[in-house]
Image 1 (spheres, rainbow over the protein chains, first blue to last red):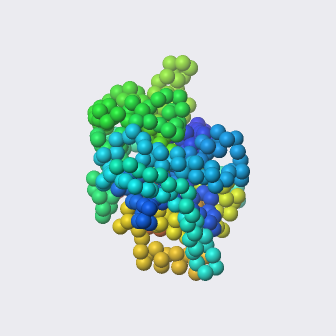
Image 2 (image 1 turned 90 degrees about the horizontal axis):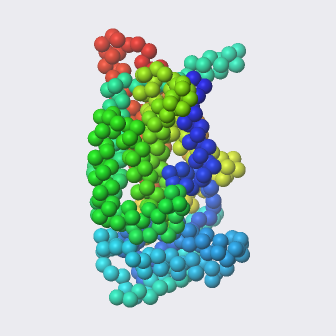
Image 3 (image 1 turned 90 degrees about the vertical axis):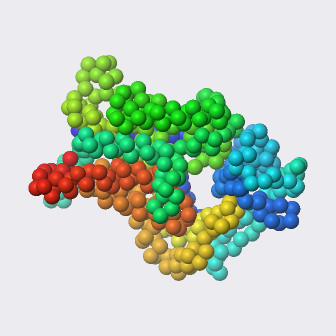
Length: 148
Length: 325
């Protein structure tokens, strides 16, 4: 009987120990709550937003995760700490992201609404909880010229 | 006195549940269905879990995760090969539901599910709603493979399920319950660690997360963004931080103590309803769905099949110790 909960304990230890190693995960969703948050979105040169689901088949939330995968890869390659990263590094991670999203060989015909052409900008929006409510601040990260 | 109460409580519970043949069949059937469809109450009744043929296509694994660190899984992302994988998994579900050749069928089913979603999660954006089903399948595969191997190697019964035939047949379902409970406890512990124990206190700041999530939806698919409801909820959370801590803190403790669901059928039902409600609240607040989690909670924790059988037996005056089984 004392062995009955062994599967529970093994799963618990593997998930906490391996953190993100599919199918094991430490399930970090909303584990750290902060007064500040940020996200990314895409827009055309004219300022019109590009809906990620229609053009890329992914959510803006997934796009943020992909951005950070590129940033972590770059940080490891440059052997820099998080605090040492400069605006040029954030832009470089953005370039890698846009390259993955738009220049890959993946067949996106099933998802894409219509071909996207012209300049596409990656914008970061910082959100903060302030006394007066919620403040938003946007900043330009990088851009890419898409040929027809 | 208190110690005696606690000792009696612990001795009385945390025993493996016994699953009747009807219940075992229904649980396998419902689990197999969860692999493919996740019907949404009042919404899309044909929502898919495993992407259908033609809807899964990846030519690379730019940010490997799990098995993708060791193996190149991109071959599964070929639409033609993926169609075979999909139909193969559907075919394997037939013997699985019938309870035939489980030590052969389940490892392939688990491996197929894990490989497909490992490739999906190797694109740089790790989501957290697929793991639970992969882990349940993996747990079931281990639960049917390990006991006979153990007996062959060690010459005695596998300790967690013993040599009793009924317990052996129920073992894979008990493992499923334990895996699901562990996923929630892990989520609770992660919150505890990351927030340094202050998670409940910080919950009013979740309004920032809500605004972020809503904005992201606006840039994902414009018509999906929240409206007046969201503004009202944010205003409520800002105006009543104490009440927000009380409500959201309840969800946190449900996760952290989810292992209590393994105590008895009644506790499993109570935690199942609580955690299902938690997911519905998250969906309402954050527009963030965990359909696999919800469906597995209904199947294994709330378990309407068991309660229907128990209720029928009770009506016929055959009430035995069903709740404790």
